[in-house]
Image (cartoon, rainbow, N blue to C red; front, side, top):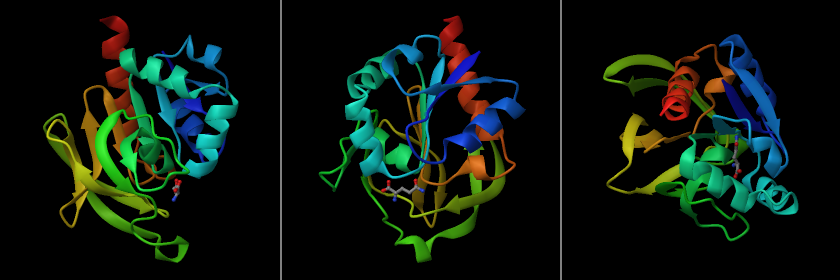
Length: 193
Ligand code: GLN
């Protein structure tokens, strides 16, 4: 199985390492035709305004929307912002893949970055892990069709809608690979179907 990692800007290298540790082949995605071999796509953290600019420059905006109709997408942090239905910042153009409205840096600036213990619920079982939040987006509104897989203080931080998932934190910066495994299972299901 091949999972693409959008490699335009930001924390993509750690996702590569996580996928390699799971024996999944990561594919660096910079141009639309590179998506062809992929069963899923990860959009990493970084700077959503910069990623928006680069997506336009590399003509990836529409290609990602088309890809997401059939294949799963997993966004972390800036990736979650890009997957949202809307964000209160006109310099970011979202892909509208998950019915959430987010506030960029909604938990504060760099100095307010934090680590918190999270209870994650995947496939009916739960486990706890360290959530690393770096200028993380805050979900302000969430649609009825969006499943909440983890929250802090009753606010969702890991969500799923259909075959897409998004985290406001950075699982790739921990040794916890179960969210990546869960995502790869979604990708396998769809490539077999
Ligand atoms: N605050 C950043 C943004 O607006 C996201 C930060 C991150 O990805 N760690 O894009």
